[in-house]
Structure formats: structure tokens, C-alpha cells
Image (spheres, rainbow over the protein chains, first blue to last red):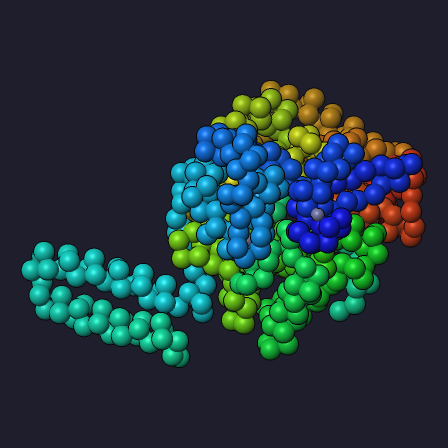
Length: 182
Length: 359
Ligand SMILES: [Zn+2]
Ligand SMILES: [Zn+2]
């Protein structure tokens, strides 16, 4: 959604205002919203509590606190090059603009995500069957490599040779994947 | 299938059938959040991008349909009447967010309403499977099937390190929200719930009321769900929830036994007073209706009342909400008129049971 005031930046703030008993909705970017000042009251839409939570978490990051107190340094503002969402906007709405935001804000995001997910920062679940093809292979290869180590330790060389062949086969298959060949 | 049929077929599978442990677990739900690669999230996406998401889904369907539960039907939010949307929401098939805030929101429904795929909600795609009774693993299996079917043609936003990328970081990783709806009247009557909720929270699970506003749990119905989506596998998340739910089930059962021992006649009295209220009221508010329905359901489960179907609680909790009442009335109703309608709908529903008993 694009900001209805400037029609340029993404609208990241959504307001409701009661005017003469009529409810009116506003979708603004952060900049335009600031210019409107407290004319608006925040709508209590979903995600608000999460957004508070994130803002809370985020305020504990000393690096950013410094930045928010020094508006002159705004040029260094952290922004996603894909969707142009700034980290400040994210902290306000608690939602990203695009998948690339995860990369763009990676450093700032890590402590937040860890706090949300009890210290975790690695996905351990389902992997898409098709686009995840090479991931499946890599996981399988890693498993086999561990197996190989154990077999060698146990001096079961015959089995180890079989496992090694299988690893080679899968590695070949994976190179095919990477080259985009089907 | 026509929209009328969806709407008239007021009772979804999750409300009517009876699943495992259905004396306490009313329903089990699995939700998977997915986004399409290279398309901005609904947080900021343009109308063109929103339309392209729907196009993606339509293209997927035209290649080959997911027909395990009959045809999927695509409903565009912009083409529905406010009341129709409200009814879908009251049946828990779509979210308030999809009704109120979505741009080019849509949903795909199966005929039995056990599967609902929301499009352009907070994420591009939200697969939901809603099963009666305690069937989390079964619901997860079906959600996986749909996920795989979609992924055959759609490129997901997925990161090798942190998994499925969602618009809100609270869902990143598996994108999984597993939840179970439970009827826990005896734990409330014996005042144990206040002690149990913080203990469950400490395990990374959330307990909240599902009907009613804020923290109140109308009808003594609670939803227990996982909070953490990253780091654990989907199966582990479901297993962890299942073990807590199993404990809650046995605690609720022993609280019922204790009540029966210590205050049998008082409990029976309460159950039948509530039954009397429901079968005789001419005006009834949501809160009172919910309290009485919970009592009657408990009375059925504990064999004080015989011959009334157990579905009555889940069914009437949904059917006596404003959207359904207005649909039943065939037009808008003011709050007081709704209370009258609610009373008459409940009376009629109970009479249906009497007829079945007599016949
Ligand atoms: Zn603007
Ligand atoms: Zn971005």
C-alpha cells in the first residue's frame, strides 16, 4: 500500500479518525504521519501488541537508541534496498515489507528474533520440496559424511567405501542442481 | 459449489462431527504462513502485486486442483457482502484481519470447510486446517499436503537458515501456529485455571479465550497454541502442544470427578437451571447464553442430561453470534433484537433435540 499523502513511500502507518461521527481511514508513510502530528489516533488493528513488543525489544538495543536520539545522522538510515522499508518503520509496525528485509536488517534482527523464539536462530523444520531440492541434498550429504566418520572410527571400511560412493553420487547430483540443470 | 450453500450450510465440519477426546477438545487447528518469492509482503505491496498473488493461486488451481475434500472454491473479499464475510469469520474460516484490513483479500475453501486458505492476509498465503476434536497430527498432515500442492507451482520466500519468511518475525521459520480449542468448565469452577495458565505460558505456549473480548473466555472455551515458530520442527511443536493438551484433559477430567463427589446435587442443579434458562428465555445476552451452554454441555458430558447432542455447545456458540443471527433473521438487527433472536434460535435448536428424542 502506498502512502495516500505523498503517493511515493510505502504506507506503514494506518490510522483511524472519527470526524463528525464518521470513521475515516488514513494510510500514511512515517514522514507524512509525523507532519500530521497528533491529528490521528492509532487504530487498534491487529499486530499492535506485537508492534509494541518489538518496539520494546528494540529500544533495548543501545546502538539504535543512540541513532534515534541523533536525527542529524539520519542519512545513515538502515533501509531495505528491495522494498525501501527503513528499520525504523519496521520497528514501528512490527512487520517487514519484503523477504529481503530479513537480509537487510539481519544484524539488528538477530537479537529480536532470538528473544521471540527462545534463543533460536535456525530453522529446523520443513523445507520446500522443489526450490529446496539442493537443501535436501546438502542435508543428506551432511548426514552421510557424519556416518562415514563413524564408520571409519569403527574401522568398518567396506561400509565406509559404500557410503563414500553414495556421497560422491549425491554431490554430482547437487552440482547438477546448482547449474540449474534438471 | 455456490456461495449460498456455504452460507446456508451453517454448521462446519469442525462444529458438527465428533473427534477424539471431543468431550474436552472441541477442535484442532494448524496454520502455515507462506509468502511468494519476489513479491512484497501485504504490509506494503501495491495493488498490482496483490492481484498477482491471486493470479498465482488461480494459475495453480487451473493446472491441477487439490481435490481431496472436493473442489476448492475461491472467494474474493471484495465481492462478498459485509454480513457474508462476518459469517465466515464467526465460523473461524477467515480472520478479522482479512475482513477488515486486507487489500485484495481472498480465501479458498473446501466443501467440508476443514481447509481454508487465506490469501493476502498478513502473509500472501495462510493455509489453515480445522478438524473436530483432538487431531493435531492429522491436521498437520493435511496442511503439509496442501503446502506441497501449492509449492509444486509457486516459489516460496524461503531462507535456508531461518526458514519460511513471514511478514511478522513472530511467525518466521516454520510459519506454524498449532492450536487447540478446549472446554474447561471444571477447571474454572474449581478455580485452578488461574494457576494453570502461567505454568503453560512458561512452556512457550499461549492460553486465551477464543469467544468474547479481551481476556474473558466465554463459554469456558480456551485456545492453547504455540508461540515459538523457529528452531523446532513442526512435528516437535505439535508434539509439545499435544503433551500439554493431554495433561489439561486429564486435569479437567479429574476436576469433574472431584466435583461429582463433593457437590453432585449442586452441579446437577446448576446444569438443569441453565437448561431451563436456555429452553425458556425470550431475551438472552451473549454472556448468559455462553455460560448456560457451557453448563448444559458439561451436564451432557457428565450424564446428567441425556439425549441432547454434544455439538450443541460448539454449534450454538458460533450460531448465536451477531453475523449468524442477522443471517438467520434475513437482515440487520439492533443489539436488543439480537438478544431476542438468540433466545428463539436456542429454543428452536433445543426443540429439534426433543423431537429427535420423542421420535
Ligand atoms: Zn507519504
Ligand atoms: Zn524489504
